[in-house]
Image 1 (spheres, rainbow over the protein chains, first blue to last red):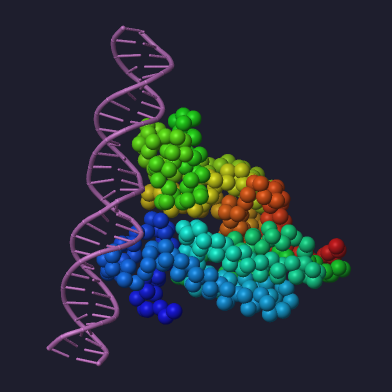
Image 2: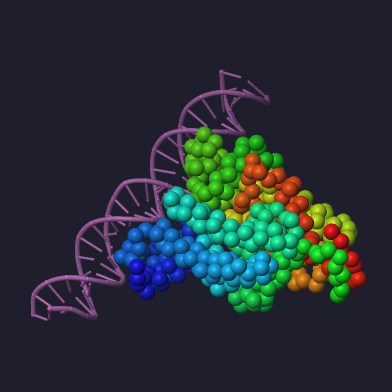
Length: 199
Length: 199
DNA sequence: TTGCCTTCCTAACAACCGTTAGTTAGACTG
DNA sequence: CAGTCTAACTAACGGTTGTTAGGAAGGCAA
């Protein structure tokens, strides 16, 4: 399935518009005009408006999976594993910001069967984080928190970055990633028995 | 400005629909039919569709402010103050879930001047959290984190609850609020000099 | 009873929606 | 040169959009 460059241009333009106006408030003609085309001309390249959304959502989901999943199953100790997963997730959110924002906010406009697919992928993805947290608790290096709630807290915080991050703002993606990783790892850290903490 | 009960019914029905379908994908006729009315009949009660959105957004913003702001300025020590702010914020999110979700996700469909007003209110609200964090750092009870990033992390996580919380799910709002408060307070906690932590 | 007020109805408006059909101009292929 | 392919165009389709106008039914005040 080779993608013509034109098709990708359409997806990129649509991604930008879906992000700033929302899927439902963006017309096919809007997308076309962003590429100096007439509305109907898009249909030489795509089957439907929803098809474009599906492409954007899929490639964003792929991105998260290929960047984060390998780190989740590499057998590293829970703390460093979770740290790298957080950093990779933030990296995807900031580097594919438009796609990520559309993926997170607009996937509900997909048809039901596609929505179900996305739900399943998201749940599997979130399970990677739950597993890292659970592993850390079992190993005694994380405090005995509620795994589900904690995973939601972390992922909500990370995903929120897609809303407010600006590449030309004062904060680099690296800084943000490290701050978030520090924050949550400290939140999870189980203090050792009889330990003296000196600062 | 007294609100007729009918007007409130309209806002409630609209809030539910805006939340599940999005503002742009919800038609005036959809809202009317939810109340067994014809589309045009709504205009005896509201000036425009955007007006309804504005009411919902405003009352949600009011709710956050009246519940949280008093706790933010009561002069309590930063940790307990922040804990209560988090608990109150979660309480609003879960008890006014539909309004909160619309407030957080659909406010971008407001006209520009109203959007600016919402932006200003949100920034002032977020500043309450930044202040609590900054106070804690200055008092030496919180670690020297980046105030801005940390506030965004906390609020993104709390607001995310509006997306996934279900009143009839396994988790009570109280549980969630306490878990989040514990998580972030531990993340912020500055270990004391020469302290022995025993568990 | 008369007249207003509220609440709802029906019908229509201009604009816009996603999508399709038919066509045209230009670039490759034989 | 003839034939085919591609990418774009224009025009139209049936439907929906937010909103308005005008009217009808009922309750309440005089």
